[in-house]
Image (cartoon, rainbow, N blue to C red):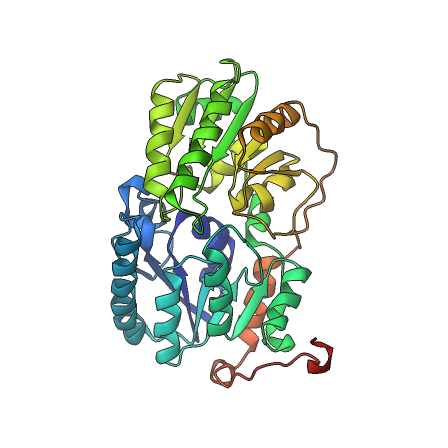
Length: 386
């Protein structure tokens, strides 16, 4: 029986990983061990471990203090992650460890796995996000990893460009989109009851994350501009804010949003919606605003316009339903005016590919884990480099 470990450290990666976790749990040839850590245990991020508890046979809790969102606090947290995961992985010793995305806390986890000779399978590598430190983290994880599952062909080629062997890089599409089409969505009336709100003439979901390569002054300007523009909208519009990730400056942004919500009765702030409610929001709302990857990857599958602000997601492949604007007040006003009545006709989602979870599972079952550790750099034609 193959021992497959999976790491989840936030609501964002768990909602994407969930369909794969279900496949792994149901396969009799797989012994799945789920390592739950990071923001899942923080009240300010919705204490999302409560949604995971009891869902799978083997769940390992690795609580780590993620409440600090300043540089020194994050650095100390990462040192703690290294210590705790070294012990946890040494005890469990999975044949392959799965990590997803670009969260900075995955770096010490990946380092621990490598030191313990545990091969890593990385999901969502090769992507670009020029406005966040995640850009460097994601590519570093690619080099720590031994198998790669990308969400589109451009990203597969980029992972190979980073020196990974083509026979270890698989374009499987986005796991998040596979789960969307299996979801029984809540109606508007059910959403109103679940959220204890009254939806409006127009309904927008807003998720604003820090641009972590920028300084604090930039974050102040960004959140001020966004909230000023939203305050100018008619009070008949409803605004649903979801919390930031546990990023540098994240607490500052969340606190400013909470202040806004306290004086605007047509708005609500939630730490976490969970996958079903979040996808139901995308199904029933009019537009997605902010700088979340969800506006790039998931929202297009609902024919929903995304107003993507700033550079956090700069570089990602996007559908025609995504409208990019800079962090400038006049551009935000113009962008809001554009998306209010925007109708998107069949916005083909470049991240969709049928059977994503099954494709990943088949690879995990067919490879030789010990053979993965023998990793060689794949050189492109060096003569083409100028």
